[in-house]
Length: 287
Image (cartoon, rainbow, N blue to C red):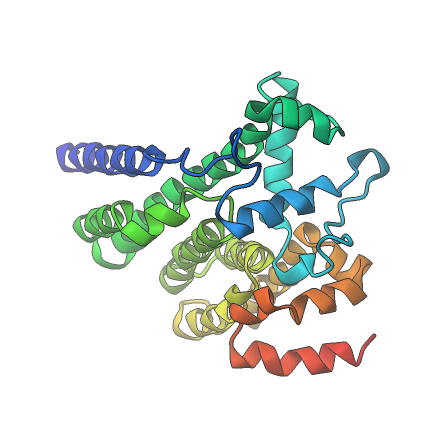
């Protein structure tokens, strides 16, 4: 009992360390009286995607003339970001109006849009540290879990990406979380483990398309796990992938043409493997 309590204390310290180093410098490059955008292009692009949505008309399509390739990445994290903006506007912390002039005159209000996205990335960055601890502990024990979490919490590249409004760190969280359920499939193979693994994969793909090959690891975990003789379990897990993906990236069907256009954009291509490339021509033929 004392060992478990001690481990939890160490984990809290690691997580607090992760929070601290990710908050330091989070204001870097935010809009001010000298410039109205940041120096990270992904942040500005994501703001544009949210701007064109019109919740009053149930229009959550991020495609516009300014960004015709908006589906170069999934929309799940984009919707989380938009929801965060709405919640914060209800608390009066930030103001949402359809007036560029207002934000030019009140640049601090405009800055809050970027800061909200960055803070959301910090949250997912810290959650990834926690998920890494779980994976390490499940595979090799508590000490390995703590060391893994510690290394990630101070890893410079992860810290930097946790300070931007981008999809990289949130996408990584869902990938790491999937491995928690892969291990559960290996150890016990219950239906809920397959479903949660499938959901995690679907959300990872809906955040970053490059997470697509994760379904192969789900199949491998099934073949090596205790439930390998029950094909129905694997079907549940695989079915959860497209369901969770389409729920969070619905315009993959509702706007199929622009979805395919986005898949062929430089942003999507940069994060895809050769396997993904081979699928695009086939999908294009379905238009």
